[in-house]
Length: 419
Image (tube, rainbow, N blue to C red; front, side):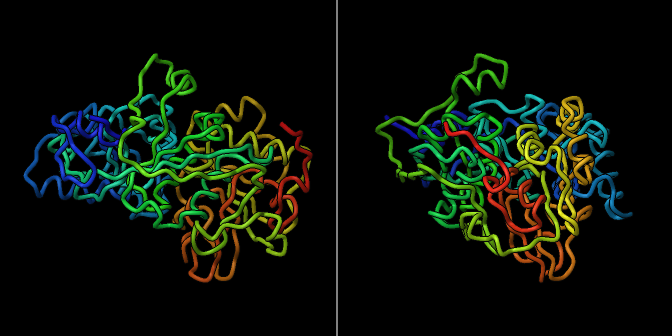
């Protein structure tokens, strides 16, 4: 019988055929936690009476939110994670110096494969759907159970397929496509659904671009964000792998999005769905520009920003923070001269961390300040004071804004060739 990709993956892990709406217990291939959610999961793990994780090769611990340690409490959280990793002989524990932002790091390390079921105590675990995995964020209690048992319960999600047709403007990228989608369907438009991305516009994207889009599926309320596995996926993974695809006659809903000529977009406060063309927000001056995060901290993103900033200086009075998504991204950017471009432009470059994105450290906003960020959320107080404002955009808009001091369509400062 015909099935969606989400139904197929969960069926294979539950040992029975399952359908959207049913509740199932399924095995998991990977369990993830960080320095905020991990300590609580470890506490619950011990309260359960568990002594050993189900498989030390399938538990991943990444201290990335408040590290390098911002204070004593952050240091204690990281220490607890480190000790648990040693006690349990966890294979995949990534410490400062070799780590990265978790959702950049795991695909980079080859830990994510098509058809897997991955749970993480972080809402943006859905990022891995770009590689064809059923990956979703869960709470620390569920992660504790998964670490102990290697299984977890799920409600099988319905599927909403977004078909992107047309060719966006050369200045628009993956971030603009996902902002457009969220602007169209709203922050609850895919609530607890499997959001599938398809169509000519997304098929042309690199895997890095697809990771950006899948990362923000949760901002539309989705349980997972899924891409079909193709030649680009296999090249990225370095393996001849097969994906799990939705049958054409399966039960799902399709929404067609016309992105022909789509301009660079910005999500204004305080929702990712409050989307407008960047050129309509030229009156908005900013105090800070942030380039990084699990959404846009990959090498492709840094290259896009550096291509605009090269040979220029950031606007007076604007703080520009650049955070490579992983140590490997940092090193590659260094070797290509990208880090030099940022420094010569007057930007500050940090070691990989989630700190500024969640208003934790290294980029916290004061009252009334505005930030144009390549992150995924712009809720009230997201990056600091509750009266601060966060505008979301891609790396090209961020770099252009850094040069002018106000929200800027990159086509105002760079000439983009058609095609």
